[in-house]
Image (cartoon, rainbow, N blue to C red; front, side, top):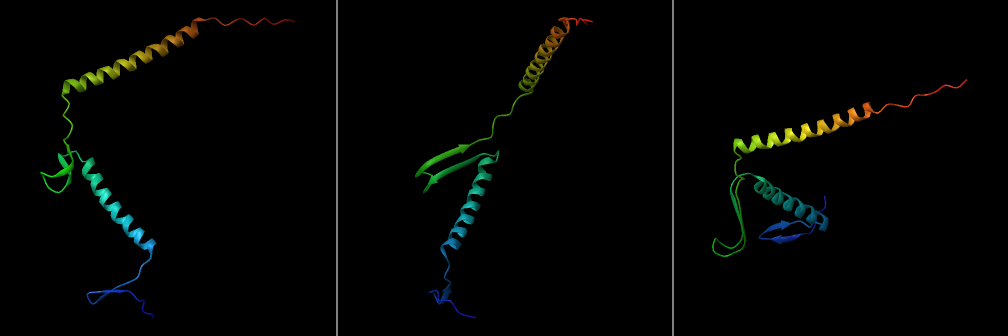
Length: 112
């Protein structure tokens, strides 16, 4: 086995690594942090995000609260509106079919 020469820090030895290994490690780390932030952001709980040094000194602040709960009346209205739209479409289709059936087809005459 050959020993690779590396950088010595505090009596230990830091092995040489290539730039593509560094890029892979960086991508994995950023992906893990990004996934964690995505889970926090997509959650339906109350969360506050601040970019800065403390609660009094920050650059960007965002507060996310869950959406308000819909009442039963609003849900019923939405369902009735959807049912009305479906019934109107059905009536339009039935009217078209009835119009097509009312138009007589021309008769064919057979000549000898």
